[in-house]
Image 1: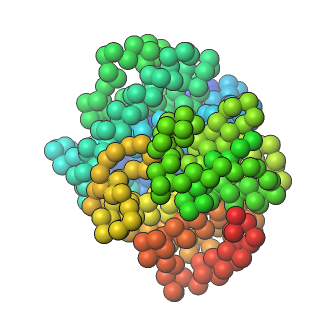
Image 2 (image 1 turned 60 degrees about the vertical axis):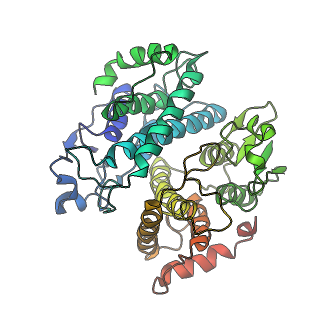
Length: 211
Length: 211
């Protein structure tokens, strides 16, 4: 296997943390998004959409979605389970994972990508090869949805150690990456959200968080 | 089990087709989105986000995401398989399903919800309880992404009967719902996309398409 990565990007980080939690050592190929390497011919032959991460199998099969990569690795290496062990737990984790992704990751991406006050960014509304310009209203929508994200994060963590219960799962991985990504738009965990702050300190101190 | 449904909405339809393909008969509770029933107290006690569909188990556990519902039902009723039978097939379907969802379903939702020329709509940028107003730029972005959706749909179908290969899967369900949803913004399958048109006729004629 080979993992096409970008060390500063939040979605590849989700997969890297997953890989680290599984104790796997998959060779990485760093792609420089800031330098536009993901939009050059060579990488577009790997993923024509210009997006990361991509997991490539030895036979050339490629998976170009973070959750597909994680599910594939969970199938091959079930321990420790990060996507649930029973039908109910799996469905619960799927529900929560998507909320962390949409309300956290995607909302931050909206707030960040569409803010033309960001000096170091190309002001494109979507990542990869798509070429839609910045849409100003998405900054407000992204910021507002991040408020929803933090509201629910605190609720989920009120009575449990991790977001989906007593065990660290993919839900925590996506939420951790979202919280750190949201720092790019200066929207940190609200100071009164004590359960979220406790959780953040906990999950950030896991060795996988450095992956 | 109980299925909270809305017969005109595209996401509940994805789950209904899935349920029909499995040959299951799950009691349905219709929620009138147009009349705002999803935002009333009673339904918000079922799903505080005001979104559909929701699957409720007999013990009260609820899943409020289409893919979580489908995965749960696939776990319980593996035949016929709609989400893949091997790790590689499952990951491939996850990749393609998300593309149909983001490029097809979500893009149409953007183009539709944010178009203030729609007489019968409340001009809100997101569904459910969120209250962000229409964002005009999302109409163009949605339309453009639908072009990407149709481009890839045709490519995927060039050498295979269904989108993920020889077998009908969740990928076809999401894509079918996206194509029908895109009619709301008058963006039909381009006439030159003969493989997509052949596929559309095929999948639309399955009994499940009427579910």
